[in-house]
Length: 265
Ligand SMILES: Cc1cc2nc3c(=O)[nH]c(=O)nc-3n(C[C@H](O)[C@H](O)[C@H](O)COP(=O)(O)OP(=O)(O)OC[C@H]3O[C@@H](n4cnc5c(N)ncnc54)[C@H](O)[C@@H]3O)c2cc1C
Image 1 (cartoon, rainbow, N blue to C red):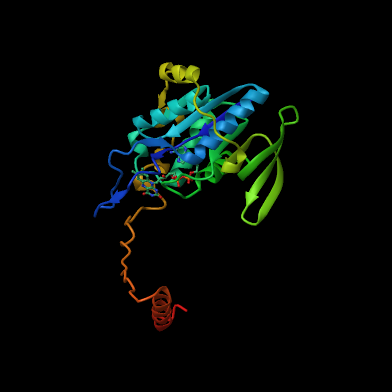
Image 2: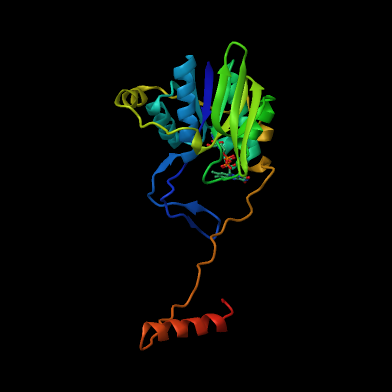
Protein backbone atom coordinates (compact mmCIF):
# COMPACT_ATOMS: atom_id res chain seq x y z
CA UNK A 1 0.00 0.00 0.00
CA UNK A 2 1.32 3.39 -0.99
CA UNK A 3 0.44 5.82 1.79
CA UNK A 4 1.11 9.56 1.87
CA UNK A 5 0.87 11.72 4.98
CA UNK A 6 0.94 15.51 4.69
CA UNK A 7 2.27 17.55 7.55
CA UNK A 8 2.80 21.21 8.30
CA UNK A 9 5.39 22.66 10.65
CA UNK A 10 3.79 25.06 13.15
CA UNK A 11 4.82 26.99 16.27
CA UNK A 12 4.58 25.01 19.51
CA UNK A 13 1.19 25.39 21.22
CA UNK A 14 3.02 26.71 24.29
CA UNK A 15 4.52 29.60 22.25
CA UNK A 16 3.45 33.16 23.02
CA UNK A 17 2.47 34.67 19.70
CA UNK A 18 3.01 38.36 19.00
CA UNK A 19 1.61 40.38 16.11
CA UNK A 20 3.22 43.67 15.07
CA UNK A 21 1.65 46.66 13.30
CA UNK A 22 2.50 45.13 9.91
CA UNK A 23 0.56 41.96 10.82
CA UNK A 24 3.78 39.92 11.14
CA UNK A 25 3.28 37.06 13.57
CA UNK A 26 6.30 35.98 15.62
CA UNK A 27 6.82 33.42 18.38
CA UNK A 28 10.28 34.29 19.77
CA UNK A 29 12.53 31.33 20.44
CA UNK A 30 9.68 28.84 20.76
CA UNK A 31 10.36 25.66 18.81
CA UNK A 32 8.56 24.72 15.60
CA UNK A 33 6.86 21.35 15.76
CA UNK A 34 4.77 18.98 13.69
CA UNK A 35 1.19 20.25 13.61
CA UNK A 36 -0.21 18.31 16.60
CA UNK A 37 -3.18 16.91 14.66
CA UNK A 38 -0.76 15.47 12.11
CA UNK A 39 0.83 13.17 14.69
CA UNK A 40 -2.40 11.15 14.54
CA UNK A 41 -2.24 11.14 10.73
CA UNK A 42 1.37 9.91 10.82
CA UNK A 43 0.52 7.21 13.36
CA UNK A 44 -2.41 5.99 11.28
CA UNK A 45 -0.26 5.89 8.13
CA UNK A 46 2.37 3.81 9.94
CA UNK A 47 -0.30 1.45 11.31
CA UNK A 48 -1.70 0.90 7.79
CA UNK A 49 1.78 0.10 6.53
CA UNK A 50 2.37 -2.31 9.42
CA UNK A 51 -0.91 -4.09 8.61
CA UNK A 52 -0.85 -4.13 4.81
CA UNK A 53 2.79 -3.58 3.87
CA UNK A 54 4.04 -0.87 1.53
CA UNK A 55 5.46 2.47 2.53
CA UNK A 56 4.58 5.82 4.06
CA UNK A 57 5.86 8.97 2.40
CA UNK A 58 5.55 12.20 4.35
CA UNK A 59 5.26 15.52 2.52
CA UNK A 60 5.44 19.11 3.66
CA UNK A 61 5.17 22.38 1.76
CA UNK A 62 7.25 24.95 3.57
CA UNK A 63 10.70 26.47 4.11
CA UNK A 64 13.92 24.50 4.55
CA UNK A 65 13.40 24.32 8.32
CA UNK A 66 10.26 22.20 7.76
CA UNK A 67 12.69 19.32 7.16
CA UNK A 68 12.88 19.05 10.96
CA UNK A 69 9.17 18.16 11.03
CA UNK A 70 9.74 15.63 8.26
CA UNK A 71 12.62 14.08 10.20
CA UNK A 72 10.37 13.77 13.23
CA UNK A 73 7.81 11.91 11.09
CA UNK A 74 10.53 9.55 9.84
CA UNK A 75 11.66 9.06 13.46
CA UNK A 76 8.12 7.91 14.25
CA UNK A 77 8.28 5.36 11.40
CA UNK A 78 7.59 6.97 8.02
CA UNK A 79 9.81 5.59 5.25
CA UNK A 80 10.45 8.54 2.97
CA UNK A 81 10.09 12.30 3.14
CA UNK A 82 9.95 15.13 0.64
CA UNK A 83 10.02 18.86 1.19
CA UNK A 84 8.15 20.90 -1.41
CA UNK A 85 9.69 24.34 -1.37
CA UNK A 86 10.11 27.24 -3.75
CA UNK A 87 10.26 31.03 -3.23
CA UNK A 88 7.36 31.20 -5.70
CA UNK A 89 5.15 29.51 -3.05
CA UNK A 90 5.61 32.34 -0.47
CA UNK A 91 2.28 33.83 0.60
CA UNK A 92 0.27 31.03 -0.99
CA UNK A 93 -3.26 30.65 0.34
CA UNK A 94 -4.95 27.34 1.17
CA UNK A 95 -6.20 26.95 -2.41
CA UNK A 96 -2.65 27.28 -3.74
CA UNK A 97 -1.35 24.89 -1.07
CA UNK A 98 -3.80 22.25 -2.34
CA UNK A 99 -2.46 22.73 -5.88
CA UNK A 100 1.14 22.34 -4.69
CA UNK A 101 0.40 19.21 -2.64
CA UNK A 102 -1.75 17.63 -5.35
CA UNK A 103 1.01 18.17 -7.94
CA UNK A 104 3.60 16.62 -5.61
CA UNK A 105 1.34 13.64 -4.92
CA UNK A 106 0.75 13.06 -8.64
CA UNK A 107 4.54 12.83 -9.05
CA UNK A 108 4.67 10.02 -6.47
CA UNK A 109 2.72 7.68 -8.74
CA UNK A 110 0.10 5.19 -7.58
CA UNK A 111 -0.90 6.46 -4.16
CA UNK A 112 -3.69 4.56 -2.33
CA UNK A 113 -4.37 6.68 0.73
CA UNK A 114 -3.50 10.27 1.67
CA UNK A 115 -3.83 11.13 5.35
CA UNK A 116 -4.08 14.60 6.93
CA UNK A 117 -4.75 15.93 10.41
CA UNK A 118 -8.13 17.62 10.60
CA UNK A 119 -6.62 21.12 10.63
CA UNK A 120 -3.43 23.08 11.19
CA UNK A 121 -3.30 24.86 14.56
CA UNK A 122 -1.94 28.09 13.03
CA UNK A 123 -3.76 28.60 9.72
CA UNK A 124 -6.84 26.81 11.07
CA UNK A 125 -8.83 26.75 7.82
CA UNK A 126 -9.23 22.96 7.61
CA UNK A 127 -9.42 23.44 3.84
CA UNK A 128 -6.36 21.61 2.65
CA UNK A 129 -7.56 17.96 2.81
CA UNK A 130 -10.77 18.79 0.94
CA UNK A 131 -8.89 20.87 -1.61
CA UNK A 132 -6.35 18.14 -2.33
CA UNK A 133 -9.17 15.58 -2.71
CA UNK A 134 -10.97 17.91 -5.11
CA UNK A 135 -7.83 18.55 -7.16
CA UNK A 136 -7.14 14.81 -7.48
CA UNK A 137 -10.81 13.93 -8.04
CA UNK A 138 -10.70 11.47 -5.11
CA UNK A 139 -13.26 10.98 -2.32
CA UNK A 140 -12.65 12.85 0.95
CA UNK A 141 -13.40 11.04 4.21
CA UNK A 142 -13.05 13.81 6.78
CA UNK A 143 -12.91 13.75 10.60
CA UNK A 144 -12.20 10.03 10.64
CA UNK A 145 -12.19 8.54 14.17
CA UNK A 146 -11.64 4.92 13.06
CA UNK A 147 -10.72 2.96 9.95
CA UNK A 148 -13.13 0.03 10.33
CA UNK A 149 -12.25 -1.93 7.20
CA UNK A 150 -9.72 -1.63 4.42
CA UNK A 151 -9.40 -4.28 1.74
CA UNK A 152 -6.56 -3.69 -0.72
CA UNK A 153 -7.90 -6.52 -2.94
CA UNK A 154 -11.31 -4.96 -3.51
CA UNK A 155 -9.87 -1.46 -3.01
CA UNK A 156 -12.59 -0.66 -0.52
CA UNK A 157 -12.49 1.26 2.76
CA UNK A 158 -15.04 1.84 5.51
CA UNK A 159 -14.52 4.42 8.26
CA UNK A 160 -16.31 6.00 11.18
CA UNK A 161 -16.53 9.77 11.05
CA UNK A 162 -16.71 11.84 14.22
CA UNK A 163 -19.54 14.36 14.01
CA UNK A 164 -20.48 16.92 16.63
CA UNK A 165 -23.74 15.13 17.43
CA UNK A 166 -22.76 11.50 16.77
CA UNK A 167 -20.93 9.15 14.48
CA UNK A 168 -21.29 8.27 10.81
CA UNK A 169 -20.18 5.12 9.00
CA UNK A 170 -19.05 5.81 5.47
CA UNK A 171 -17.64 3.59 2.73
CA UNK A 172 -15.62 4.40 -0.35
CA UNK A 173 -13.22 3.03 -2.92
CA UNK A 174 -9.48 3.67 -2.94
CA UNK A 175 -7.68 5.93 -3.70
CA UNK A 176 -8.98 8.18 -0.99
CA UNK A 177 -8.11 11.27 1.05
CA UNK A 178 -8.65 11.03 4.81
CA UNK A 179 -8.48 13.64 7.55
CA UNK A 180 -8.30 12.29 11.08
CA UNK A 181 -9.31 13.36 14.57
CA UNK A 182 -7.39 12.51 17.70
CA UNK A 183 -9.73 9.69 18.79
CA UNK A 184 -8.28 7.57 15.98
CA UNK A 185 -5.13 6.42 17.81
CA UNK A 186 -2.39 7.21 20.27
CA UNK A 187 0.70 8.47 18.41
CA UNK A 188 3.85 6.55 19.23
CA UNK A 189 7.12 8.03 20.43
CA UNK A 190 10.02 7.94 17.96
CA UNK A 191 12.16 4.83 18.41
CA UNK A 192 15.94 5.01 18.81
CA UNK A 193 16.41 3.07 15.54
CA UNK A 194 14.13 5.43 13.62
CA UNK A 195 15.75 8.53 15.13
CA UNK A 196 19.06 7.27 13.72
CA UNK A 197 17.42 6.55 10.38
CA UNK A 198 15.88 10.05 10.30
CA UNK A 199 19.23 11.69 10.99
CA UNK A 200 20.77 9.94 7.97
CA UNK A 201 17.86 9.88 5.52
CA UNK A 202 18.36 12.31 2.65
CA UNK A 203 15.27 14.48 2.31
CA UNK A 204 14.94 15.83 -1.24
CA UNK A 205 13.58 19.30 -1.86
CA UNK A 206 11.27 19.56 -4.87
CA UNK A 207 10.70 22.99 -6.34
CA UNK A 208 7.85 24.32 -8.48
CA UNK A 209 9.40 22.97 -11.69
CA UNK A 210 10.00 19.51 -10.22
CA UNK A 211 6.32 19.03 -9.36
CA UNK A 212 4.99 20.89 -12.41
CA UNK A 213 3.27 23.60 -10.34
CA UNK A 214 1.39 26.24 -12.30
CA UNK A 215 3.00 29.61 -11.52
CA UNK A 216 -0.39 31.30 -12.02
CA UNK A 217 -1.91 29.27 -9.15
CA UNK A 218 0.64 29.88 -6.39
CA UNK A 219 2.19 32.71 -4.40
CA UNK A 220 0.94 35.87 -2.74
CA UNK A 221 -0.06 37.58 -6.00
CA UNK A 222 -2.35 34.70 -6.94
CA UNK A 223 -3.93 34.15 -3.52
CA UNK A 224 -7.71 34.01 -3.88
CA UNK A 225 -7.96 34.88 -0.18
CA UNK A 226 -5.62 37.78 0.64
CA UNK A 227 -4.54 38.22 4.23
CA UNK A 228 -5.47 41.85 4.90
CA UNK A 229 -4.68 42.20 8.57
CA UNK A 230 -3.88 40.01 11.57
CA UNK A 231 -4.33 41.48 15.02
CA UNK A 232 -4.46 40.25 18.61
CA UNK A 233 -7.60 40.55 20.69
CA UNK A 234 -7.53 43.58 22.98
CA UNK A 235 -6.34 42.73 26.47
CA UNK A 236 -9.23 42.01 28.83
CA UNK A 237 -9.77 44.60 31.54
CA UNK A 238 -11.50 44.10 34.86
CA UNK A 239 -11.70 45.37 38.42
CA UNK A 240 -11.19 43.40 41.55
CA UNK A 241 -13.03 44.53 44.65
CA UNK A 242 -12.49 42.89 47.99
CA UNK A 243 -15.61 42.88 50.09
CA UNK A 244 -15.02 43.35 53.77
CA UNK A 245 -17.43 42.54 56.57
CA UNK A 246 -17.70 41.47 60.19
CA UNK A 247 -18.78 37.90 59.41
CA UNK A 248 -19.00 35.51 56.47
CA UNK A 249 -22.78 36.12 56.46
CA UNK A 250 -22.30 39.89 56.24
CA UNK A 251 -19.76 39.51 53.41
CA UNK A 252 -22.11 37.15 51.54
CA UNK A 253 -25.01 39.57 51.97
CA UNK A 254 -22.90 42.49 50.73
CA UNK A 255 -21.78 40.41 47.74
CA UNK A 256 -25.39 39.44 46.93
CA UNK A 257 -26.46 43.12 47.11
CA UNK A 258 -23.71 44.10 44.69
CA UNK A 259 -24.52 41.27 42.26
CA UNK A 260 -28.20 42.29 42.31
CA UNK A 261 -27.30 45.92 41.78
CA UNK A 262 -25.24 44.88 38.71
CA UNK A 263 -28.20 42.70 37.59
CA UNK A 264 -25.95 39.60 37.59
CA UNK A 265 -28.53 37.79 39.72
C1 LIG B 1 4.09 33.78 5.05
C2 LIG B 1 2.69 33.27 4.86
C3 LIG B 1 1.81 34.02 4.12
C4 LIG B 1 0.49 33.56 3.92
N1 LIG B 1 -0.37 34.33 3.18
C5 LIG B 1 -1.66 33.91 3.02
C6 LIG B 1 -2.60 34.69 2.28
O1 LIG B 1 -2.28 35.75 1.76
N2 LIG B 1 -3.87 34.23 2.18
C7 LIG B 1 -4.25 33.07 2.79
O2 LIG B 1 -5.42 32.71 2.69
N3 LIG B 1 -3.39 32.31 3.48
C8 LIG B 1 -2.10 32.70 3.62
N4 LIG B 1 -1.22 31.93 4.34
C9 LIG B 1 -1.70 30.72 5.03
C10 LIG B 1 -1.42 29.48 4.24
O3 LIG B 1 -2.01 29.55 3.01
C11 LIG B 1 -2.01 28.33 5.02
O4 LIG B 1 -1.27 28.21 6.22
C12 LIG B 1 -1.93 27.03 4.27
O5 LIG B 1 -2.61 27.10 3.07
C13 LIG B 1 -2.53 25.84 5.00
O6 LIG B 1 -3.78 26.16 5.48
P1 LIG B 1 -4.11 25.85 6.97
O7 LIG B 1 -2.95 26.26 7.77
O8 LIG B 1 -5.43 26.44 7.29
O9 LIG B 1 -4.20 24.25 6.99
P2 LIG B 1 -5.47 23.31 7.25
O10 LIG B 1 -6.29 23.21 6.04
O11 LIG B 1 -6.16 23.71 8.54
O12 LIG B 1 -4.68 21.94 7.50
C14 LIG B 1 -5.32 20.68 7.30
C15 LIG B 1 -4.25 19.62 7.06
O13 LIG B 1 -3.47 20.00 5.93
C16 LIG B 1 -2.09 19.96 6.28
N5 LIG B 1 -1.34 21.03 5.65
C17 LIG B 1 -1.65 22.35 5.67
N6 LIG B 1 -0.67 23.06 5.10
C18 LIG B 1 0.26 22.15 4.69
C19 LIG B 1 1.54 22.27 4.09
N7 LIG B 1 2.04 23.48 3.80
N8 LIG B 1 2.23 21.16 3.82
C20 LIG B 1 1.73 19.93 4.13
N9 LIG B 1 0.54 19.76 4.76
C21 LIG B 1 -0.17 20.86 5.03
C22 LIG B 1 -2.09 20.21 7.80
O14 LIG B 1 -0.87 19.80 8.38
C23 LIG B 1 -3.29 19.41 8.23
O15 LIG B 1 -2.93 18.07 8.31
C24 LIG B 1 0.09 32.32 4.50
C25 LIG B 1 1.00 31.57 5.26
C26 LIG B 1 2.28 32.03 5.42
C27 LIG B 1 3.26 31.20 6.22
